[in-house]
Length: 247
Image 1 (cartoon, rainbow, N blue to C red):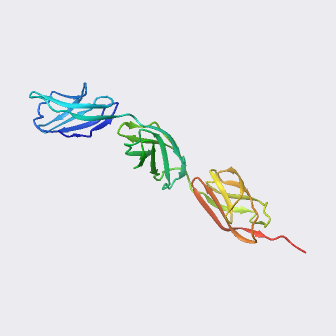
Image 2: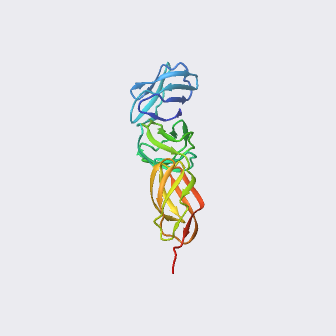
Image 3: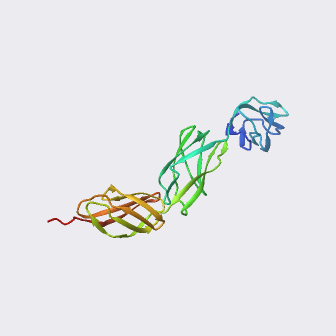
């Protein structure tokens, strides 16, 4: 007498199908000491809604002919999600995040707002999941669904990829120290600014403007790269280092 699925939430509500023989006219299906709700019944199968419960319980079917042998049903506790890292990324998705928590081993779905992704179960306390593309820039709820239920939401922020429009001034001394105003879009979450690969100190003024101080460099044009939570943007040859005079 197979039972499918053989596990479900401790809160009950799982639809379970039991197959066997001589099952017509079933009067009761017991999950341990509790009675399930029968929704359909044929001579070879019974579909029921599992009652609430905990642990491992015996499931049996009672008909006018008697009570069947028993099968095991496993109750799974609701999952708990504690953290997600990183908690932001590009609206294009494709980056991998780690979700930590408890009771995650039966996870089937991770939802980012209204969009779902299939996770990789690392352990009962950790999932790895590739973030799906977002439909807008901003925060969404992230929930994990397991056999035991769905977690309370965590928050994940989608960020648009940055663009660079202008650098002012566009040249400065090879000794560094030039204050450069960078204009563009999507700059609010900037995490790094580099001149020819060398990190520069910077301050974000708003989503369209930041100010960076050039590090020392070699004479000539160099690429300027701004990295944000939404990705990176490059101003190819956007800044020119100029050697100082000598006599």
